[in-house]
Length: 315
Image (cartoon, rainbow, N blue to C red; front, side, top):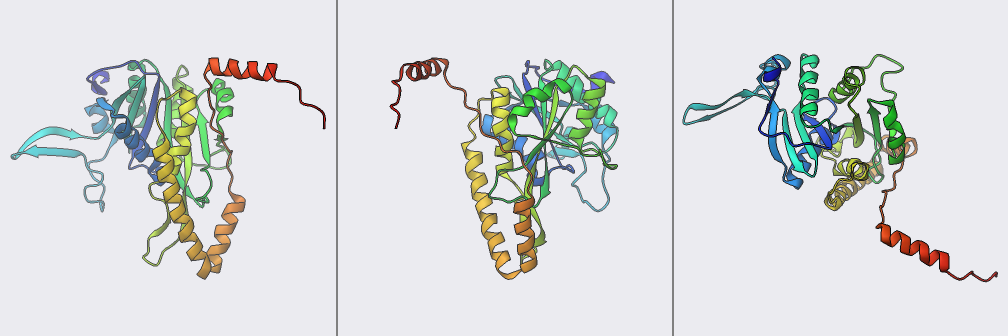
C-alpha cells in the first residue's frame, strides 16, 4: 500500500512545510484553506505531488446526503471521455527557497492512513519543520491584532516559540474535546514521529453572534488580518522571504469595515453593544512585536557610535 499513498513528480529538499485544509471544521476566517491558497498564488508555487489513490479510497465517503456535490470526489471529462481518475485534493506545492505548501482536504475516515501518508511525504521531502495553520471564530475586536495560539509536538520547541507572541492551548485538558485535523497530526507526531517538529498555529477570526438586517453574519469570513498575524510570526521564525504588506493592507481594510458595522449595530441594539464592549475587555492575546534583524555591519557601526558618543552634561 505504501506506493499508493503518494504521487510525487519531484521531491525538493524542504526546510519548512506549511499545511492547511479546505472544507474542514477549524477553518474560521478561511485561515486553514485560504492562507495556503494565498501563499501558493503569491509565491507562484508549483504543484509537485499529491496523496495517492489509496488515501482517496480509504479516507473519504463518496457523498454526504444533502450537500449536493460539495463532498464528492473531483472528476473531469473532455468530449465525453474521462481525463482524470476520481480524486481528492491533497496536494504539495514547491514555493522555492526550501518552502513547501500543502493544501489538503480533511479526511473523514482512517486518520491512521492519512497520517501515514502525510508523514511519509514529510520524510521524502527531507523532514522539514511543519506548521499547520487553522482558524476559529469568536468575538475578537477587529481593530486589535488577532489572538494566536499553538500546540507543538516536541518539548524542546517551546524555548523558541516563547519569542513569538503565542498562547499555549489547554484544549481538552478539562473536558472531552475532539481534535481538529492539525491537532490530530501534532498528536500523532508527538507519539509516533518524535523526530518531527510540528507546530499547529491558530488565530481567532472576528465573528459575532448576531446578524445584519440582510441576515448576513457579522464578522470577517476571509480574515486577511489573521493571515498577516500568523505570517508575521512565521516569517522571522523560519527566515521566510515574503512581503506581507498586501496582507496587512487587506486586513486593515476588512477590520475597519467591521468596526463601522459594529458601531452602527451598537447605536440601536443595547444588548449587542454590551457584548461588543465586553469582548474588548475580555479579549485574551499575547502581543507580538516583529523581530528586526539588523545588518551585522550596521549593528557594529551603531555600537561604535554609541561607544564614542560624548557624555551628556548633567542638568
